Length: 374
Image (cartoon, rainbow, N blue to C red; front, top):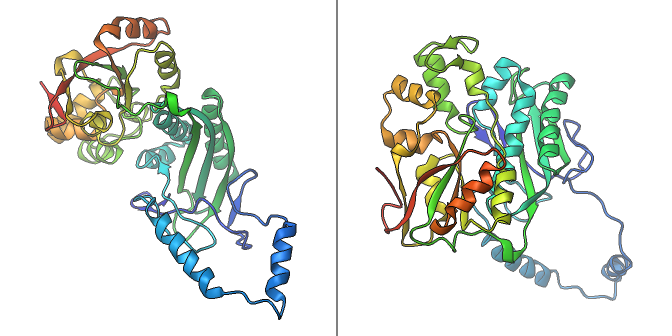
């Protein structure tokens, strides 16, 4: 997506080679290209130019209209264009308000790691192996040093997750951004066999909810966190705060974890029936996404103590329980759903790789609400 620091906008992920000097696809990107014409294509063109041939353009238009109608059935809220143009528009994942702080602090490489790890987790929880990543970088003024730092962060994260940075696009758009402002977006492609796909349909009543810690906010809840820490409390990013046990900027810029390694280990151990990546919407909105109809998550709030950052945000904003658990991850970045008789094996698997885990609660039979806290 193409976005200012205040409002999200749409960004093209593919474009024609129309000679636009301000947007240049990097090598290996998904931009469209002119392919060599096949003999069949040349023969068809000859027929169209033949005065004696009769070609029905009406049937051609009718067929295309029907194709458009069928294809629209696959559209979701992220599709931003109609069929028929020279390229399509699709809204991509970005890192949101965290980018504003990254630009202010000059921590350009960390934001690339956040983006890649977020995308890796989103496909890994479905049992998929990441294959390649494509990025979109847009700025008011292209600074080669900043671009290098941002892409270096992408590269480091891609290498750590054993996937390729296949390409991307760089755009200089001074009418959208200030000189130092930029936006970064991207998407990940992975592969999984149908038999290994994790959809959550195997989850049963009585399964345990096993939580893995987050590093901090990850990439969720930054708009509210920045408002509370920088505007309400008037903290500076370089200021040490006792309640946080850290400087404000350092606490906020902790990277979004990749959970690829523990996810793979748990899948290989055959101890999971589903995973939930805790992103926007927190536990409240993400856990129910993987539960079959008629089942709900019962979360025991005494099972863990949220890190100091979340406690301090709650105090600064006077936020209630519902808003906290719907806005922030509360210290839990991933939830694995594990059959009760396999929970010891699952935790031992994680312990062997120095991964801490928390039994958050259980799956219960209940249609509404889909998640209960006690």
